[in-house]
Length: 159
Image 1: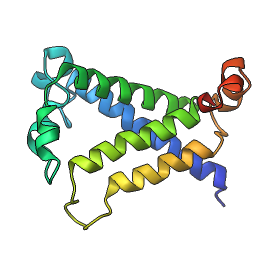
Image 2 (image 1 turned 90 degrees about the vertical axis):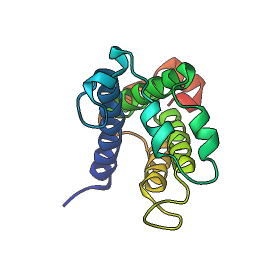
Image 3 (image 1 turned 60 degrees about the vertical axis):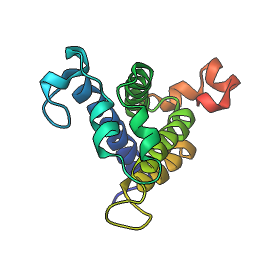
Image 4 (image 1 turned 30 degrees about the horizontal axis):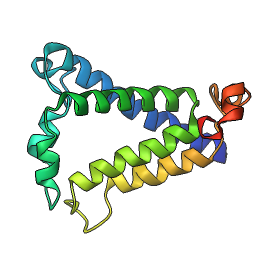
């Protein structure tokens, strides 16, 4: 029988892998969401495809205006890398959970209303999971070790 901690660990590792994969696919153009010729290392913009072509709804003009912006490209890639590593390792649990929820909220806002449901889509589910991860201590990985470190003890958001 599965334990609660095993489910939370699987969710954390799954979310971490999702972010890491997005980072590596956009960095190298692994041919899934990003083709090699549009890879960041090949001079492509990791935000252009989504922000220029996929956004819709009342906020579309705002999100379209961010397409290809070098600062937005760096923000996205650093976010994906940070979230992927921290979730996979079980460190910065609170920060990555809350920050990841904020990142998912921006994606949800870029796609309102959702295509298959008037409100709920996978981004909202990811937000709920990430908020759960922010409040649930990591039981697998470096989380226990990390929370005993001076920095994490001093600044609880870094647990």
